[in-house]
Image 1 (cartoon, helix red, strand yellow):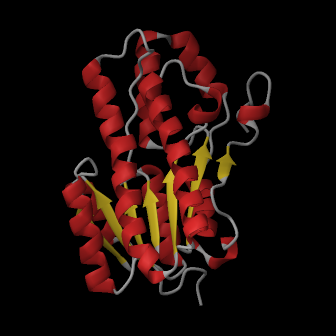
Image 2 (tube, one colour; image 1 turned 120 degrees about the horizontal axis):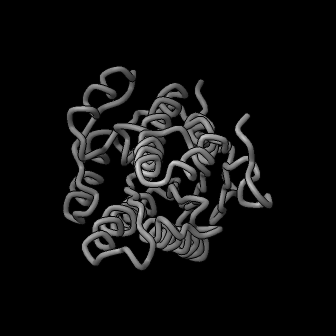
Length: 256
C-alpha cells in the first residue's frame, strides 16, 4: 500500500519543475495523477513516463476550464482527493519596473489560477467530506522579493487565501484541509531562466547566486506527499517552509 494509494490528484504546472516532481512522487505512492499544464508537448511526454498519470491541457486563468476539469475528474475517477496548485510564472522586475501587463500576467496565472482551483476543488471535496488542497507559495511571501515584485505579491495573496480556505473548512465542518508550501530556491527551469537573465545584466549578482544554497525539487515533492496523505490529517492552514534556514539566517546560506 502506498501512502496515497487510490487517491486522485490534480496537479497544475505539472509539465516541469516542482509540479512534475510532485506528480512523480504521488504516482510512486499510489495516486492517480492528472497532470494539468498549458504546455501540451512537454506535458504529454512527461505524463507518458509516469505510471498512473494522465495529461490534460489547462489554462488556469479560465474559471470555466477549471470547472470543466474538476467535474470531468470526479466523473471519470469517482472523486478528487488532492489538488496541488503549482502553476506560476515569475519575471524579474521591481515595483518601479512592473508594468500593468506584467502585473496582470503574473497574477492571472498565480493568484487567479489558485483562486479558481481552490474554489472548484472545495466545491466537490466538501460533498465528499474530505480532501487536501495544497498551494505552492514561496519564501518570497515571507521575506519579500524586491526584484520579483509581482511574483512576491501573488504568492503573498496565495498565502492569505490558503488560511482563509482552511479556516472556512474547519469552521463549517467540510473536512477539507488547505496548506501552503514555501520553497526557497529550487533547481527548476524557472530558476535557471532567472539566473541566465541576471547573468546577462549583472554578473556579480549571478556569481553570488551560484554560491547560494539551492534545493532539490524532490524535497518539495516529499512535502507535497506528506500533505496529501492521511499522515497530515490535523495539519490545516499551515505554512510549510522548505528552505534550509534561508528565511531565518542572516546573510547567505552557502551552497552545499
